[in-house]
Image 1 (cartoon, rainbow over the protein chains, first blue to last red):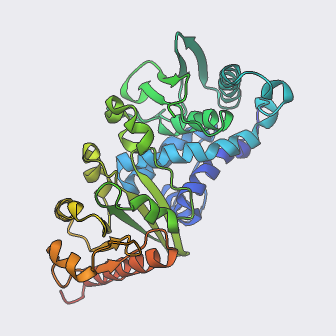
Image 2: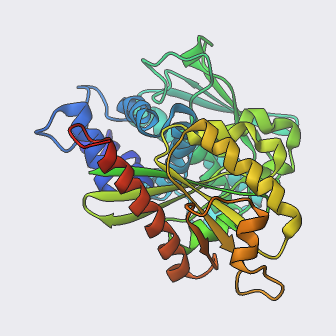
Length: 199
Length: 183
């Protein structure tokens, strides 16, 4: 069942508010919407695509590159809200999942996240294992759709994936790097995910 | 609502992360250490090489603190982080005189990026072997008008007083630059 449009954006909103604070969030929303609305103006489709606008606005306030860093922090922060919002679909805390070896748990968790995002946001995220790394690919990426850039810009997604891996593996840090981005004209967004933690 | 972007800079191990962590409402996640293990990937991960903290003073004033990576190889991040800053703090380790020259050079670099208000914080003043403040001022060749403040980065109160001094300078500067005010 598709969630209603309000709940689908909750985890994004909460993640950004956690990092920027309520006052800055309101300020950004007021700027995006005009003075009578404290929430971003949202498309009639889904709320997640508006993430790009929010990140652009954060870049306006703090500088573009710093905005990417904040987007990554917000992505990390949003994971716990994402997990709460879609707990039944994700099934991360079932006994079956928790008793799997770490690598299987991470792999299946990533597949589960991709399935959830596909269902809820109409994107096409996929997961593949290639030798000693994982690849995460997204067609119709919610974060960079309607944005153009010479750089790779999906830092919120990097943060979200990184936080899932860290949460699953007892706070270990995994390298997640975007290697292709729709915003710069690549056919899809693509991320490499290190299978073993860096530290 | 006024957003105040403040950069906390200084040589490696001067206490920048600790300074931000002492007062921030959110976790100050630094990925600097992790990045350093994959040095060849630095360029691809530039945006995360920073500490980031937030302090809500009241509904109308929120301070955002950005810590610069201390290692020289990350100095390309300095200019990126300085974009839009309203003030900066230079942290100096009072126990390591060999870093004073670098601290002075960092101060000059940031001042060149943006002529915003700044303060210099003499950190680790509680440690044995810490230099006297006035001797440090001389060694750092700081003008007598520069706010040079004793600091202990893991003390919330000391950190707050450094931030307040900078904030006063920023507010004075903003006031001065308001149209209609005498220059």
